[in-house]
Amino acid sequence: MQHTCRAEILDAIRDILRRSGYDTFTLTDILTEMRRRNSRYAETTIRTHVASHMCGDLAELERVDRATYRLRAPLHRSTGLPPVPALAPAWPWEGAVQSVFVELLGHHGWSIDSVADTATKARGVDVLASRPGRRLGAEVKGWPSAGYADPRRAAEAKRTQPSTQAGHWFSQALFKAMMLLDSHLGRESLMVLPDYSRYRDLTVRTRTGRSLAGIHVVLLNPDGAFVSEFWRP
Image (cartoon, rainbow, N blue to C red):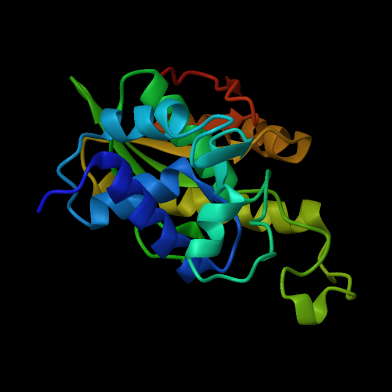
């Protein structure tokens, strides 16, 4: 028996919530789960259902942020999850940055080939996408928080300042973007980061080497606006 697209999406959402323990989920989470299930529905169909047909005052989903949703209360209770679970980390968490970037690509006609699950720190390239005549791979980083995500350490302050940690994350993304040039030949190599002054400074200070290697930095805002020296979607 074939299920409707709406039914498949709701089933996928329930599994996402059970695994994550969060109350919210992103469009990227849904697309990744539907792809994992080998859904027969096209990505554009899924996007339309989530953003339009299933989102509204009387619909199943409630939009809480850009490309971020939660189930309305009656449906959420039917999942068997606790009634008031924790909210998923929002911008500038890595998963939120990734979700906005995926939505940006979709808006410009890119097809998403694969998306890594940032919540579980899945291995692999964070985003792989393609469109006629072009392919890309993107390493995504967020902005470090001042405190610990682990509730048991919520009262502790991190020893490493966010700006210092951001430098380490930038270096990691640059290294992975360099390796991507060999592991995924022919793809544009991108580093996608939230638009913070620290990342802007590091972008300028690595410009010559990155330009020679063909690595682009995309500095992203939560509304989907972005800054990049040479890359255009």
